[in-house]
Amino acid sequence: DSGVTQTPKHLITATGQRVTLRCSPRSGDLSVYWYQQSLDQGLQFLIQYYNGEERAKGNILERFSAQQFPDLHSELNLSSLELGDSALYFCASSVVPSGGAGETQYFGPGTRLLVL
Amino acid sequence: QQQVKQSPQSLIVQKGGISIINCAYENTAFDYFPWYQQFPGKGPALLIAIRPDVSEKKEGRFTISFNKSAKQFSLHIMDSQPGDSATYFCAASIRGNNDMRFGAGTRLTVKP
Image (cartoon, rainbow over all chains, first blue to last red):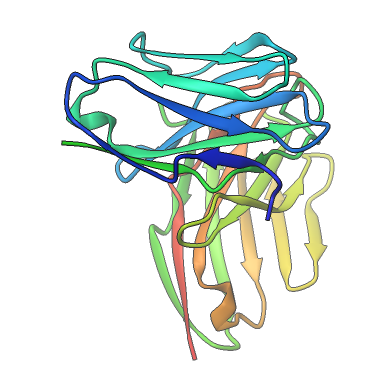
């Protein structure tokens, strides 16, 4: 158990809808990352927050947004959903702001999103 | 764009054998190379990582070999066990940069 929690575990919705995925980082971790994992694209970095502020952006669509709250939990909002958005969405957390060299990212169990 | 290329896509090894997974990168600015292990239904977990100032790092049965000039690194799993069956991801990032690039993953199956 990494200590990172994500809800819900599974989500089934229809095209055009909006969903919110929630992540609680490990106790003491200030940095939260969101990743999308699909069969054909592998693991893609979406966005990072550190202590409530956006820190870095990866391949995140404009239809997607995220935020980190004062209690450090984070939410990823996906809107105008398309079939291609079906994927596993992972949240990871780390202690330090820059999740690059030397800083371990701890991944949550993921949310499996299915868009029908 | 895929900055980290991983091969093979899938690998089947007999128990006790050596599993080898290879990765190649393009960006010479990368200076941190972790490997993640992912079991079905779980998130990836850091397995072992290396920096380019060393050519090899070993932790138990897991070894990373790093070739800076060839811009390649590989994971070797010695004495592979059925419990090692999982998907393995290599990754690369730059110190101070929050954008970690992952390989496409290798699904390893160790047959008993």
